[in-house]
Amino acid sequence: MRILFPCLAAVVAALAPVSASAASATITVRGADGQPLVGAVVMIEMARPPAGPIKFPWPYVMAQQNIAFVPHVLIVPVGATVSFPNRDKVRHHVYSFSGAKKFDMKLYGRDETRAVTFDKEGVVTLGCNIHDAMSAFIIVVDTPFAAQTDTSGRVTIANVPVGAATIRVWYPSARAPENMLTQPAAVTATGLDATYTIRPR
Image 1: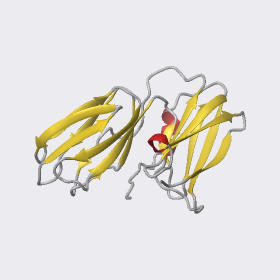
Image 2: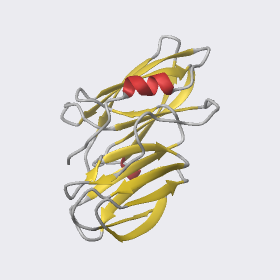
Image 3: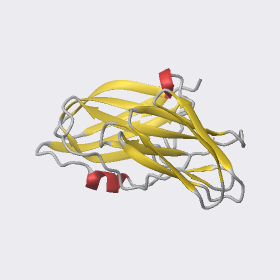
């Protein structure tokens, strides 16, 4: 499965709220064969979440381009409005039946755009009613500490508050409810360095 992801972990760290007692968290995600998983979504949810709005540095855009959704996976905060521009010569009919957000955007053509606001945390699976091979995912999160793993299967997020946390790792083929691995963790003054294994369905 093709996964496109923004290599912006450093920028995420810069935009995350800075705590008086914070550290970096490095998460590595591997498959059952030990190989790194690229594009896994890592979320760090704190027992005491920081106040303030959640913002990510990448655009909240899910384009249709070359008969595919671009990017394949998009992370957005709860309340974000995502644009769906059609950059193809053909029309698309974008929809989702997911519990986190159901919508149905009727046929629209090249250089036209639709928009949807995602007001509930969860995984939203996208499809096109005209092109069955098109699929993508929007991961709606309620934490500023979220990013995708790089080609080494690793992501580092800075300025994570020290304290109890829950680590969630999402991957489209993970053998877990909603393809999400959930584990307790603790961020100490020296940081967090953890590796998680995703087993396929």
